Image 1: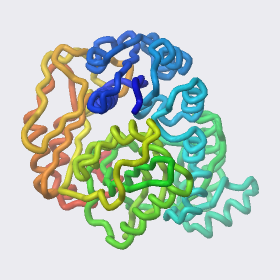
Image 2: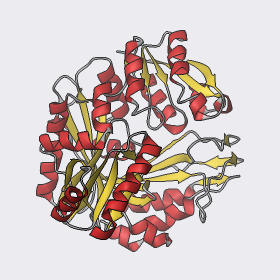
Image 3: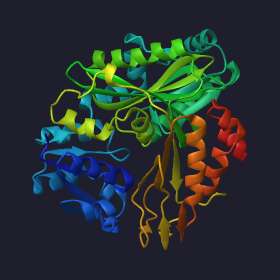
Length: 446
């Protein structure tokens, strides 16, 4: 087992990693920017070290500072969490070249899955269902581009190969605007991501966002932990998630789950990962793979009883998976509401001092949060301050439990989106299950 882990992140995920380390008897090192010295995990870690000023580029994205901190504290491994450098192949490579274990996939796997064109090619070869598309970068010949679009069928979507987070994509409804859309997207891709490569796919009009959680040890063993539905999104940012995903076609689901496990073995995947799909008319379409722990991993932990972060730590220690597919059993239903420090009407961040924080409790209620009374939410980083996860025997009971938990949650001093979450868990269409990825934005009039 690893001796000491440096947590290269902040907020609730840093605290989540620290707890898993403590349960396994692993010593912890918290790194932090100047403004984050009062974070809860910094107070609880065995050691802490300041890695720079408040801007992310000078601290949490500062690779030399992170490597130096690991060297100074004689760390065994580095856990990147999510966001920041979690899916940065250069960081993973540098961590391992410096003699530390990277708690995540190998650098070459991160590169493979980080480029959407190569990822789709790899998934197609592994028989993972994909969206009909250009099967590679769009050609430079205009006639060839138009022919491909006609074969796919309009509407199509042009996407940046190196894209993510909803940037670098454009929907095209007819041939008249295709070439201009390709040109503009290429220009945006070069500006945003330093890579102007774009590809084309069929645009699905009413899809849901369904994802599959996997664990693999890089030693030929892989399992799936079933699925999640993350369709309630605003500007491509997830707001509320649940596991398992409701109302899926059983046969398509079984085939998809198996194909994800087979793909992990085929590409030699190591660690926790998530295959993201669009789901429409009973069919799955692969869009990307996240090569890290997800924000919404707790809902999967609640319905399977498997600690995903502990498995990450065991895998990074060189141990095989502690479970087989036969050990993975679905039990009940879990729903997670992301609580953000933001204005509920404008969605602008609402940093400031938290005068008082009361977290909900009771049977089947889990709160992952770094918040405490007197803590000041900085303006510098992501606005998420808590995740409220509720588990029950049925989906209906889990939603009701979350409704009660949200009523009990109290944050004084800053604005939050708690009222929005209350509205969502009592929304009749969401309660019925299976709303698409556009539902929330239409509901909000965006």
